[in-house]
Each structure stands twice: as structure tokens, then as C-alpha cells.
Length: 301
Image 1 (cartoon, rainbow, N blue to C red):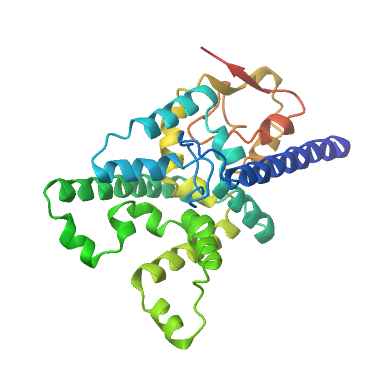
Image 2 (image 1 turned 30 degrees about the vertical axis):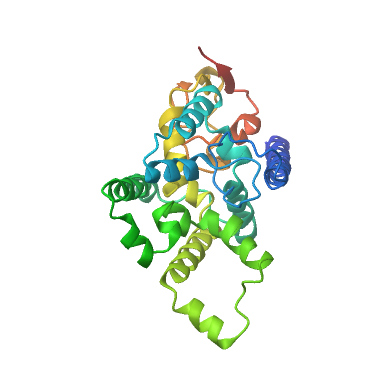
């Protein structure tokens, strides 16, 4: 049993290391500014102006707010998740990488109380509804011709992409890097006070710090309980042709799959057949940890 435990732990650490390498590699490509390719990807953290691929959720916000049908970002979310599920979340999303590193440094818990875990899922539905209603309201105001008075009093970003203005992913991968590169870091007492009393900046940084703390305490906290794009990916990935399946006859109920899952899916408790693809981020942790090959990956058309 000791040798078996060491073996699955080795495989678990190996696939986790490979995933981190892929995440860093994609982050590098994302920030090379190649193209630019207008095809948005279902990820968060590509808000910076030099990005190779835009975020589908950022594009969705901008197009809705401007009164343009968001066909391309919706197509990206639907097609990507139908073909490969939420693999983008597990392997390519820059903010997913930020969560994995924060969890590693903070030694975050992988599992929390099941009741709390289930209750917190409601939060991301509320966040998604709010982040979709906001650009719809802006679109209505724009169509009624009353957007100009608002633009005189509100930050420009709020009337273009309200989510991106305060989201922690854009703070980390766009706002902070741009501020550093443009020398916008407060250097005098007046600049510091101006930043402190700026409600948008305060809100942005407060959200970022709170999310950062939560990610250090609970692994993949943002993915599990808040991410609006992750929820959209989840809804579509339920119908993905790529999925993980449990072969019940091979399972010995060792519980390793549950221990390694970063989003707390009850794989061991599943009776068999297709696993919960709604929450699954396609990280392959359970797949490689299972010594009995009770979890298989398959395309089902």
C-alpha cells in the first residue's frame, strides 16, 4: 500500500508540474502580441493591450454594451467547450495559473465542508447574472441617447466593460502591468492620496486582495465559486463530446481521485458512467492518480 501511495503521488505531482509548464508557456505566448488574432478564447487574464488572443468574456461585455450581437465570443465559448470541455480552464487560463500558484504558496485546502461547498456555488450564478445585466443596462442607456451625460461622470471602462474594470484577473494581468510600464505608480503624497480616495481603484484592489486571500485558503476558489466565464463554460461543457468516465467495476473506493480533485468533485461517490463535467476543469489529476484505471477519457459523439 505504501508503494502504491508513492506511485500515485508521483504521478499526481508529475501531471501537476506538466500543467504548470503548459500554463506558463501559454501565458508567454499570450503576451507576445502575435497577430493579433481576433478569435477570443474562453479564458480570463488576457485583458492587456498586447495580448495575442482576447478574452471571450471581455469581448462579450464590450459587444453587449455597444449594442452589437456577441456572436464570435459566444461561438468561441460554445465550440471550445463542446469539443474539449473546460480544458481551457485547467490548462490555459492565466487566472487559473494565478490560482494554482497562490494555492501552492498558501498551501490551500482542496476540500471544504460539503454543505458550504454546495451553498457557495450560488454565488457564481449571482455574479454571472450581474455581469450580464450591467452591459445590457449600458446598451439600453446608449440606445436611448443618454450615455454621454453618464460618460462625463463615470470612468470610461465602466461604460465599455464593467466587469473588466474591477475584475481581479484584469487587475493582475492588465491594470498593474500597464501602470508599471507607464510609470503610473504613485510617487508623491498627493498621488497616493488621489489613488486612496479613488473609489474605482479602491474597489478594484479590495476585490483583488480578498480574492487573493480566498485563493490562498481554498484551491481554485475563483473557478469554483465566482468565475462568470467558468460558469458559462460549465453550462456548455455538460454537453461536451470529450468526457471522463468511471468504470465502477475497476474502482476499489480508495478515494485518491477525490483527494486530488482541485474543484471537489465527488468522483469516488459516483456510481459509474460519465462524471460531473459541469464542475470539471479538465486538469487530468484524477485520471493520472487512479492506479486501477477506473477513470477513462473518451469522445462520445
